[in-house]
Length: 493
Image 1 (tube, rainbow, N blue to C red):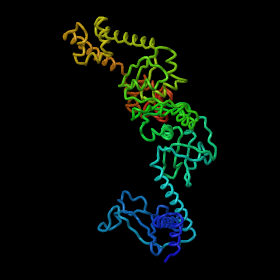
Image 2: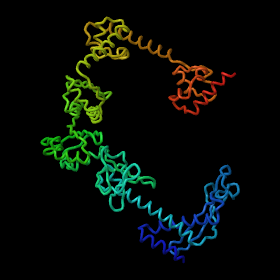
Image 3: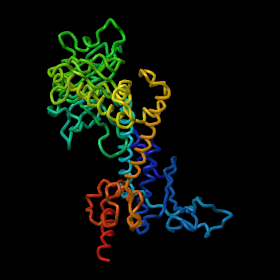
Image 4: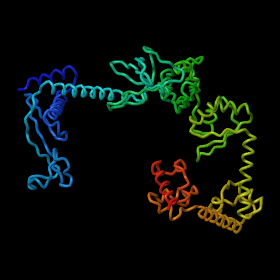
């Protein structure tokens, strides 16, 4: 009986909380490493295994080979070719094993076992931490600054658990000192053994959500829902809220008596100004609320492209909507999910007038209609020849004086114009020369991309620099240089 191994297993299991089976496996792995170093140092590819009797501590060592096809027989130290064995007894994938002499569980093996066990302990501890914290991703974590680290801070979370707060995840003006208390959102849990395991952030949108939940009981009790959050961390933020109880003002509840609730949030975020906005399922109303305190004159919404033209009556209201350095409109856009185009009434009218003229001239010149009919087509919403050509004829019935025959004639001319434009487009597409396509190393995809840039011949390519080809898809600098040099060979022929 090998009592030394049994003693190690029992002691480590009691002290470190690892299962005996994990420790037995660690010792087996250590004995394999030690045996290779002692006996097979010149053959690192040799395959070994050690089996320890869990009751007695005695152990046996085995060398084994994997049976492979003849064409895969590349490592004789751990493989056997199937042709060298009895086909009635062996198949590809079988393991042939033979027992060899075991080394003593001496100082070297014990040291190796200790290293493996320490690694096992670290892995087990990281797994326990990951299991405990993965369900808490997105939650507010409270800790204490332990010390500065490279590009960030180590945060003591208690019970010998540490988090990492990257500098880029801190607020612009804040300085965190050792022993100071810090609130942060858990954003990432890493299970592997490299890098920080628990990553924290004070700039994530969830940070603002968590602080509001903490300060506003109606949010914590889910009477008020937080719908969207947009932040410029440390400077300004917008939060949209919706109440489930119409007797409660969601904005007033979040701000609190004399602003006490929102001030507590802003103080934690180094003075970040937080606007509370009433959420609405009506995009127009939602955008108007998001742009407060500015007064919006009207909104032209395009839900297909998620864009909105916001019209203002005065420069003062436009400036208020845009905010300092575009802060207000940028956050409103992020909050609502719409790209917001800010315009004065005069600018918008001029833009509409210009667009109307462009469309009217298009129809007047290409459809051979008079200006009144061209304007009528614009008035009912047409902006392209394709629309005129292929919409149902009933679409034209709102235009006075057009009968079915006239509608057919207009649509026929529109179709002819569309076809003519397509043919013109095809004729203007340049094709690479046969010599360029045949150039050694050239692909058709690269050749056509070059032709689109007026690099049609081998001589054209020879005159280029590597930088000139940097935007060709799939073409790296090395290959670009080789193609250019190949093209320049024609200069010396």
